[in-house]
Amino acid sequence: MAKKNDKKSKLEEKLTRKHELVWDKLSQKEKKTVFEFSKGYKDFLAKAKTEREAVAEIIKFAEKNGFKSIDEIKGSKPRTKIYITNRNKNIALIVLGSEPIEDGINIIASHIDAPRLDLKQNPLYEDDDTKLALFKTHYYGGIKKYQWVNQPLAVHGHIVKGNGKAVDIIIGEDPDEPAFTITDLEPHLYRGKQAKRRLSEGIKGEELNVLVGSVPVKDDKAKSKIKLWVLDHLNKKYGIVEEDFTTAELEIVPAGRPRDIGFDESMIGAYGQDDRICAYASMTAIAAQKKPKRTAIALFFDKEEIGSEGNTAVRSRFLETLIGELMELKDPDYRYSMLRKALSKSKALSSDVTGGVNPNYKDVHEIKNAPKVGYGLVITKFTGSGGKYMSNDANAEYISEIRRLFNKKKVPWQTGELGKVDEGGGGTIAKFLAEHNMEVVDCGPAVLSLHAPFEIASKADLYATHQGYNAFYGS
Ligand code: MN
Ligand code: MN
Image (tube, rainbow, N blue to C red):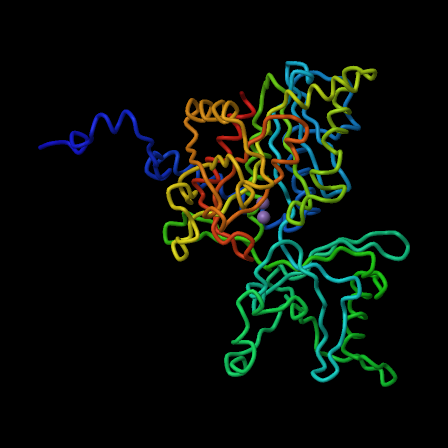
């Protein structure tokens, strides 16, 4: 009997590029490793639902793996593991290499903020007609607003009280705790007006009001009794008053833990995988570095989803300052020109997710160049839209380095473009890293339902991402 392989064209085998499903190539043992690895990731996702919580989890993980705060570090011995934080929303993990920092650094940069609903500064009100108490919100990042209604939501955040002391709160995650929700209109009542709205207007921004109470206080003289019950409850539980909302950052996020998806449990469904899947893959990869030649840095930025503005985003001078601090460990009188040289000789992976082909909406993609879930780490040469506008179009020489590295280390990879020409598009932090004159390319897994309250990633891609980042730090 002829073997299957005999039917293959030798010429085709020699010349054409293969697109292989990662699952096809994994041994039983490797599959087990992939599934095992995803457990730690799911725990991370469950605990890191805001940028502040992500920083706290990254510090916990880093300290467990031998990293120390820069304040505790003296000298610059190779292999020293350091972390530096910025305002509790932005953090860097560093492993010093044996080569001088001036010769360049290997950087992987992800973001730890995710689209959500933020409470307004004066959020709590009582609807007079219905006697229900609600929170006003202003959404953060690119969301499809209709996706956020009729589901359990939790409140996570940080409140600075009148005396300057802060309290962190999480309500709605524990199944024994109450959750919150946004009520949509029932089909019986929506035909007149709402059914005629365009999908992008199906739910409007000012309709994203979160239901938080319906019981009045026993106080005959009080005007808004339901609102007052909520304030009284928050005061007893957290010691806060209404004015404290003006100095708070409270985020409404989907309640509950990540779930395995599919009969085969091959995928993960969870909130905030853009871009915490890359954050987790890079944090575990940098912790695995034993003796790097080049200094390795994992950067975790805030505010990518709203344009990377602000002092905890990539566009602040955090990266420059931290490299300066690292150079000072060796030589307090280092020259600024050395810092610039270090940055321009650095290599970076802008580690962010991209949108995978959705079987229900294939026509938004140009299928020959679209990234697919389950096909490994995606190298994205350019992002942007309308003729690569506003994108970092990575250099062929640099992509070639990454290609050879991934092939050598057997990291499953594919290329990707976000949507058809002149139809799709999006941005990442790659172009801001490139401002330092370093080499940068976008490199992260493909995810389905990006920016939805429940995003889908493949466990095989998660592990491929970790493998790829591990190889990059080791190069
Ligand atoms: Mn992202
Ligand atoms: Mn995003």
